[in-house]
Length: 300
Image (cartoon, rainbow, N blue to C red; front, side, top):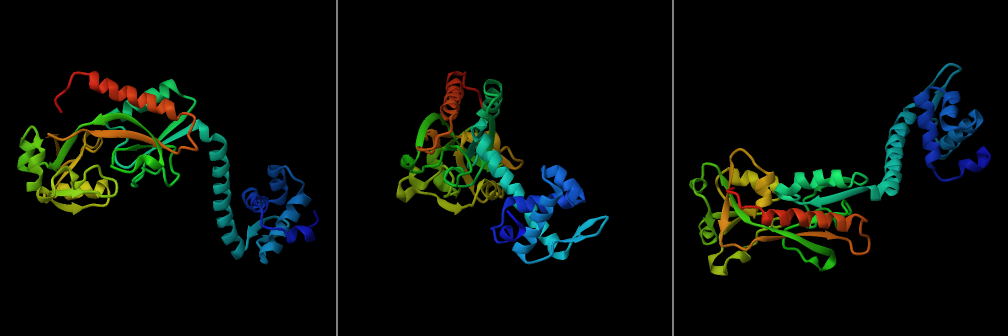
């Protein structure tokens, strides 16, 4: 393709790679060596890019090359675009070698570290990454993960899903709250207090109480907002034991909640695009929750 025909073509990654290589190596000759092209091909590619953009990108002398003002701007954008393209290729070609598990609040609770350790030992060929995403599906609907841990009461019909275990509920309160001196709290005592609820990703709803007995509510936006509200002492919170395991904060005390049904813990995934390691992850999670049930109950 000659320079005239190439100048009318659409912008291609090779044009941007050429510009970046010339600047990074400092010469057309070294850029040609880096790109595996002839020096003439590098010159034609740069000329095509300048024709396409309608601006001069480089100041050239017999000893050096330097970007023009327009060249500096184009170079910065070129680096971003090339990095994005490289990441896209890497994700597409190694996607099955990496498993992303999303969660809104607390992954697998006190099982999280053991899950990671066993996965690393048993499946070293597949890198595991846990991602916290404050959405009802833990990032699955947004395409940010392959599987998601779900405790919140969402409609599971849109997803493939598996129940991996159950978790007890607990009450979160300020550490100087009078209830912090108690061993446990009853469910029927909660309506006497103001309850912090994250209605987007939280596990608690007012359906736990009959309508006339429901507590006052302060709505929060995410786990950090929820904890901050509770730490002030103006409200308390109900949550899964997993939250207590993963969010031990100064100023916050957790106590078991009596008379409440345990929370189901599901893994969900896209029905038509499952990761090859999906059922392996489900099996490991079930083993950990099953071991938890069979172990002697410890005082928490």
